[in-house]
Amino acid sequence: MAPSKHSDRSAAPAPSTPPDIVLVRPATRADTDALTRIARQVGIGHSQPAEVADDIDFSQALIAGQSPWHQGPLYLCSEAISAGTLERRGVVGQCKLEVMAAGVWKRQARKRRFIVGREPITADYEQLEYDAGPQHAMEFAANAVGKEHRGMGIGSMHIRSRLLLLRHLLRKLSHIETVCSVTLTQEDTAASTPDALVYPFYEHAVRAFFGGRAFDEVDRLRYKNRARDGSVQFVGEFLQSAGEHDPFRAIPCHLLPDHVRSALGSVRASAERTRAFFLKLGFKHHGRYDVLDGSQVLELPRDHFEAVCRVETFVARSDKNVPPYAPQRVFMVQPQQGKDFDISRFRCVRAPVVEDRGELHVRKEVLALIDARDGTMLESLLPGDEGA
Image (cartoon, rainbow, N blue to C red; front, side, top):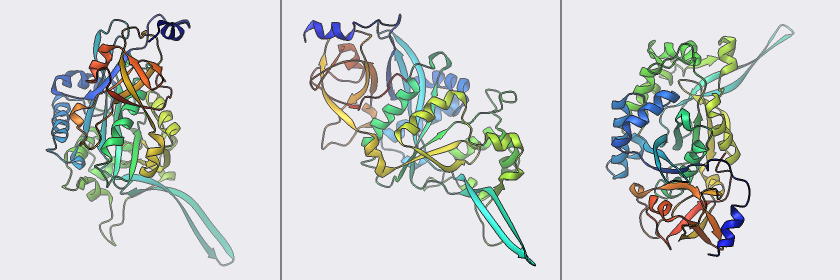
């Protein structure tokens, strides 16, 4: 490749430090401590080492074909790597793909009208009704980035890498009808601790339905007590209808305290960028909320998914002259046609590249991160704001 093409790319003023390269891969037991630390920082997912290790073990069994999708998560983690020196900075984030199991609250508008004598009385109100939720849905779950690496586009990288991965997984998961994301709501920061999160919606509206048990205990149980079909039986047992004399649970919105009602479905500051990213992709909120903490559920029908996940293919070219300040793309090795997709080999990277007529020029060390070499076929999502 002619040197002038690289000089054109690097002619613009560059920041003092180039954005990190980011690698997303399946989590392993060696990542337990780092992932526990991130979960405790962010207040998302399991925050005890034994629970994190259990999730990783399940994920590894899922990858090996020894456990079914509807019983637990595929656990991924991200590493940051200096674009200048290629120094590995360690695990900086996590994300999961998981078949959605527990139900949701659905906001419903209700209307009653009656005539007393000649006086019509009309009542309009809203209530949250327990709903089984989006059926056969794959959830983009547990998107978290360590505090010291926020604002670097790693959360967006988590989404893009899972979009690329899910394109191939869905070919084997024909029952999946919806793709969704639960955007984190704001916890009560004054009352919460790293070991015990407190959510106003749960405390005021939901806790009594589960015998007064604390949020973290019920949240842990809903992921540890799945039936053979993947449903969370105890959630349905406490919230769904048990017959004519025991209707489904409902929460009249006007009975919620003002601060709880106004905050329902609010998005914590650290999750705003993630929510904006999903909305930009076409995900929508249809009035559904997480059954425990009241977080928004964003949804995208499967038949819209291909339109969102349009990819370009490139031939990899090993090139030591790619500057660290070159534009970055998110890409992975294109699986071989006619062969089953091997999740264990999934590696996705965001790295500086130079595009040239169907070729993607990448440093040899970056190609090695995804088990690629010169001439390997790569696939990348159509360009977007990977650094946002």
